Length: 212
Image 1 (cartoon, helix red, strand yellow):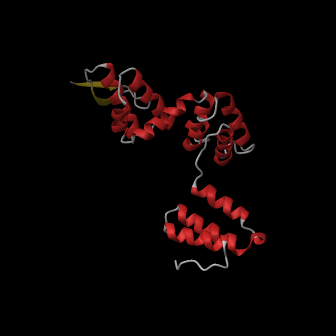
Image 2 (tube, rainbow, N blue to C red):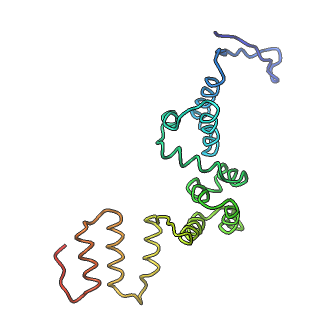
Image 3 (cartoon, rainbow, N blue to C red):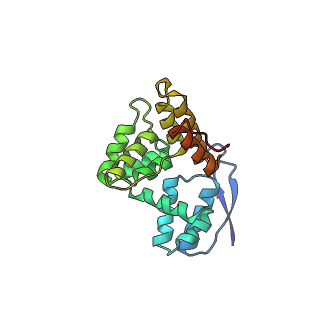
């Protein structure tokens, strides 16, 4: 039902402000969901806020991942990824909330043991700006996983940087051409046969490959 309240203005104490509000009778779950909707619509939540709110939906109200994903209009995979941030120390979660640590970097940190997360952030933090270098974190996570016999995929940006660093004047034109072909292959811009031709040309430059 609707209710009307009056609030005295500090600027105009003799001219009260009339506000209309709606009082809704609902249970705790409905009240929580309505509050979430209002905050999401006003864009007042951070990924960390969302992760904590989703945990409450999951643990207190028994929502399944699929239902949470549908409510947030996200994929189940994204919801599962966001859940990883809850394992981070509170101070790192705060840095994610303020934007000093991007979400993608936070997800990388979540792959490290708790004892190594703070260490990784300290090593990757710029002393003046306080910003965290995501590439440093990603490299540290990859190194740790390789040491454990696991792996972590490289982004196209990382691969391009690697090739650009290794294809200086001393390496010659053939390495540059192969690197360029490799980047196009990874990006899905050339066919398997074109990549094979490039590899043959690099390994056996005197042999003529099939036309591309």
